[in-house]
Length: 623
Ligand code: SER
Image (cartoon, rainbow, N blue to C red; front, side, top):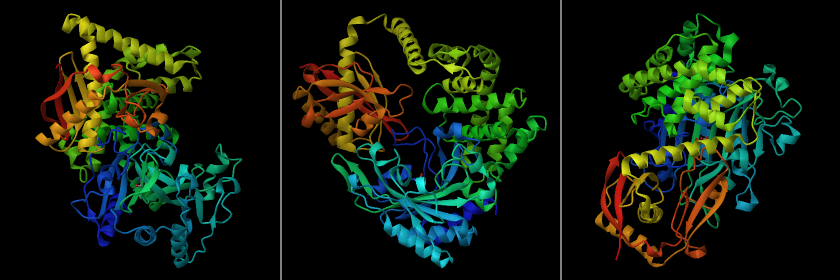
């Protein structure tokens, strides 16, 4: 079966069970500040999992484009990709465990004909502290299903230490069998949803001997041990909890969120043991072979796989209608990293001809345009940005490589390499590792300091250039900066928790604030927001700042940008104290110490800034 057939079979199968096939959402999330990319099918559906009605009903299915930047360095291990397609089906408060596990099993063994003897399941072992029990219901359902397939399915605990003992169903805790966008229960910020999950694994076979050669060789092998023998091919999450200040509460509805990687399902169905050996990569690898002067994939697996994965990822990210190009920030930085890393691995294969990445991109587009039409629409953009980025880097590649030569490298040098030669820091670290070069003890700190110094210098330069040095404007700007925190929190309380900051620009005269929200604000909403901000100002609340780890900040429910780059600690500004605390936000500052003399907050304008993003202009008037 081809990947195209598998995708279609899955969608049709769930359509038969009353699901509506919905299109893939954009890879660049609209309303989700917690991540740069759509990394799972449930992300765009969060409002509906929490109770809003979906226009297409309570049963949905799709193939969602997904991107996980955290897996960049995992590529090459037989099962990870940065870009992948996630086959998904959802019950929005409709069916639950019984239907979900049965349909999934049926799809796997009847529709795509996997051998049930190679299938294993895992379930949540429970956590008393958060009041969630062991998932015995799923165990019973799985046992029944396996029995129908002629298999007696024993369930076992403690598998990490005791091994699999001929079992079929295994219990794991928070780390493995709980799912939320931010991982296990303890890491979830307040307001986040999640729940226990049940994963399905496929046994690639003991004869692969991956375990014997792996770093886990002295530990018992089990489905989740990461040795590569067992591969997770799907995850049914039972999203039924929301984290609140006082603990975990049941959501209004019990949901199912299933996701399974198309690449992996195709891989096991095509009886391969590496995602790159499926038809989803065939043409791309063939092109790389040609470009490399007929080098063999088997002899250079890692380089072939990194190039294939990264250029495909870059194509899809740039092919999204949002028009994001390589840059030094946010999503653009990841695209830059992908292309540059591919170029570096290309050089290892001896591919030096300028413009080669574009040729790979053309293959990606022609392979996928039949399902993702945006690639076709944005073809010119993808190809020209790819070419520009490659050229820019090719020019400095060699010089940069030569700079990484000492026994030890410090953070300041890594920053200079980025500034001068465009070496993303991760790439510098990777090259250092390849060459056995150590990182200095304070590597990240040094890097951050150099970055900060650079930013301050450029800020001073531009302030001097454009404003002729408005030294005494500092205080007014600071006031407006604090007002922006009050504004964000008020918007969240008036319009809803989906509101997140999308950018701001503050001068001594006014603040400009972008945030995500689908509609124009009514006059009433604007007044409510203004009143709420002014009410806080009248309370003369103190502003305090604390430093803490990003994890801790999230745990305490701070808003703000969670994708902090380097450095463990973040600053959290709180307006008000204890019960009276109004806002808590991750921010670099500076802020006023007390908001009592901010003046009167007034919204001057509210308009659209881009799709799904609104812009407010506001001032502080003095009474
Ligand atoms: N959201 C879950 C996951 O990403 C299942 O779709 O694994």
